[in-house]
Length: 184
Ligand SMILES: *[C@@H]1O[C@H](CO)[C@@H](O)[C@H](O)[C@H]1NC(C)=O
Ligand SMILES: *[C@@H]1O[C@H](CO)[C@@H](O)[C@H](O)[C@H]1NC(C)=O
Image 1: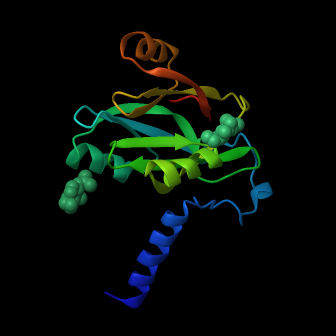
Image 2: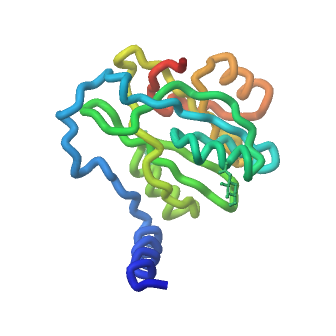
């Protein structure tokens, strides 16, 4: 193992132990890019694992393909479009994962993300992407739901699906996670 590799692992462990999630947008020039520029928006792919009772979301096609091929997730389409690069009006959507709960958790709230890492043993998996926190540019709500018994965070743009998860599947309504551009 190279020294550099060891150093990277140590840094990663230290960052996790401190419970601080990184904000990669901090040093970027946000004003250079226009809001509402759908050209830089990409599908937020969604998959579900019945065995793990886990909803998983990513903009990374290769990662999604791996989850479907190798990790027994079923593809469930996309939950609208989100941005790969930040603009003035977007917020970072943190992605966190708990291997104990088999739960992928997404939030724009940095204190909540920090808390999940510090208190709830979630790993900081970086930015899922960038999203709106208000309903601008023709965006739509991405609803957030949680099942304590399944230990599963579930996100959907469908009001029907949201209603069904609450009335039939034991999920609690956790409001609106963020706003995404409507899916294709
Ligand atoms: C599935 O896993 C194998 C072994 O790790 C890997 O080589 C392959 O690329 C993976 N498949 C996909 C679609 O990522
Ligand atoms: C963010 O999360 C913290 C900690 O969980 C919570 O106290 C606060 O109300 C949240 N802020 C918003 C705007 O939801």
